Image (cartoon, rainbow, N blue to C red; front, side, top):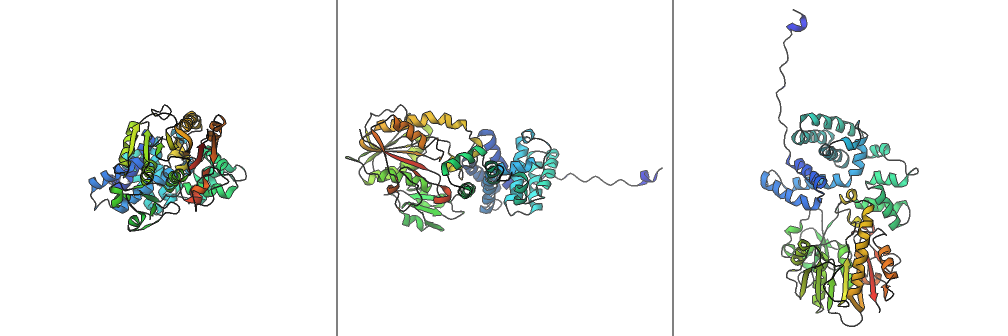
Length: 475
């Protein structure tokens, strides 16, 4: 008998079941919903968080766990382009050949390693445990091997390796470093103008966590009431805005629960205020929000209209979104009406309204802070798909307003094809309409450009990149 055969065999290690981490499992489920169902993180996260609290109990899933899960989801989505470039450098196959669930786990791991303060060992081990739970032991080994390569450099070190030099390809450099598709970088740069500093500031702002901003609906709540909330500070520009510090929970605010206040970006508030503040000739009793869903601007306009004895008609094509508008307007102190109607085939008569807001459907490139997944979902061809609808809705708005009245054309996109190009094309065919200067309607708001239209920016104003043109019908 050989020496080797006489040695006792080591007993096999007992199988260890993977440890289930509710925070990372939740984050993985959210990413899968975004990928598989084209869901939006801001819609899928709240029910997942509620489910986790109910299942695990508050002692095992507290506010810190909810905050970590939220950071993992949003941080991973915002930096997806950068992390894809890093992961691609660490695998031996094209990323398109990596199963999407595996790529989600790798991206979550990459964010923990490169975008958080979680220690390297903890980030790798937690990601491998997640892989064992949701992917199986075999693919967990692949995850372990890739993330150990990712951990060899910090984010700056990886960017030096995977991003082309700025001088060789400026747009591709910015796309990788700031995690935006190249075509979006190009479009934003065209809209912004200027040199490198401005576009980098804008792209960085898109990757920051946005503040929660509340609106005190006139006649129903006051900013003084909202400012009594813990960690609440005044808004920057809107007299009805109050900002909540990081971690502030809108649902904990009584006025929000009662519908007297709401969550509304300050840029959105400014659009409504500018339309309401523009001078009209003659009567001022009939207002229209022609694309009212989900109801934020409509609720503010209805409250402002009520203070002047005016009535708002809020129209929304999709019935379920019209229901959201009705919920937002419930309890308004003055008269209003909500209908489900196609804005391109309106049921009202031409020349009916004194003020009309048309906040048209768009690519949403101005709200990438809030919906980071939209940057990866949108395509350049979407601009062609939206263009006919945007022009048709603006034409409807100009038909709907009376002579001497005001139309506000708004988008949550700074893309020139959705803003100035639409207005210019429609007004070429409408000689009885003229642009008026929107800047005086926003007193105290700086850096509004040369006018007459207005473009807000995340890195300048701390708002979504809202666009507004005010048009008076003259004949």
